[in-house]
Image (cartoon, rainbow, N blue to C red; front, side, top):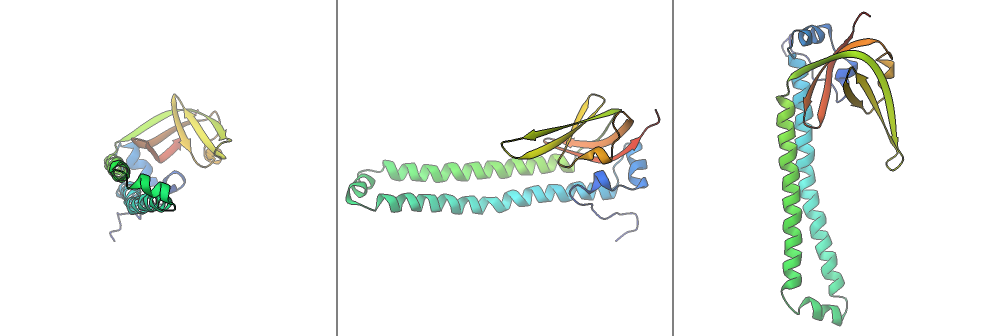
Length: 190
């Protein structure tokens, strides 16, 4: 591996681990090779997860249809309904087609989001930091948010150990659809 290329960082590695070279490049408006590799690895992961869910979705839909057919075949009255016309068979085939189309749409959207992420432009925001957390009792998940100037950035982990409330920061990030990745940040004098 070339010395100027950095290893791709973990999924949340860039917010916690970035080098002085990363920060200096981001200050010039450029992402480093390591940051690009990190974004590309996340993009590949998004597409890979979507591709893996496709056959699983097909198997579950076929299992559901087989279960429905088994229920129809359990007694004479339901068998008579099943074989009374093509309507039920057409409905079952339509369900399979709808599931396949939804899975294909999910794969298309994931691929598109991955392309946006790989080609995301570096952006920056600066301002005083304030933090907030939201707890969803339905999901049991706590989300953490930083307000940097007028920009709201969401986190899965509590970032309060990295950003001091009321202090002035400049954050370098890229936004691609639903993904917003912080590449580096710096505390500014106040």
